[in-house]
Amino acid sequence: MPKRILQGVVTSNQNAQTVTVQVERRFKHPLLQKTVRKSKKYRAHDENNAFNVGDTVRIQECAPKSKTKRWEVIAS
Image (spheres, rainbow, N blue to C red):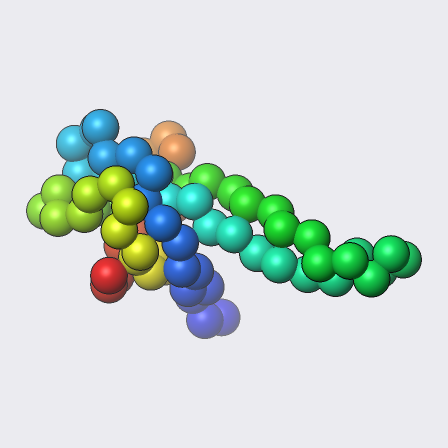
């Protein structure tokens, strides 16, 4: 099964080797046909602390690194 890849914006880099990435998805409401924006935050592993708040990054699923980290940053 392929690993999922998502794109989002870094919202926090306070913790060592960890960034919080907010991923937004857009879809049409099934009944109202209005475009709806939903967002979700993921905690991702950033080995070299290379990313800062506001950076657009791509994250990929990985084996659990800690209690909350199941993703790793693959590119900016």
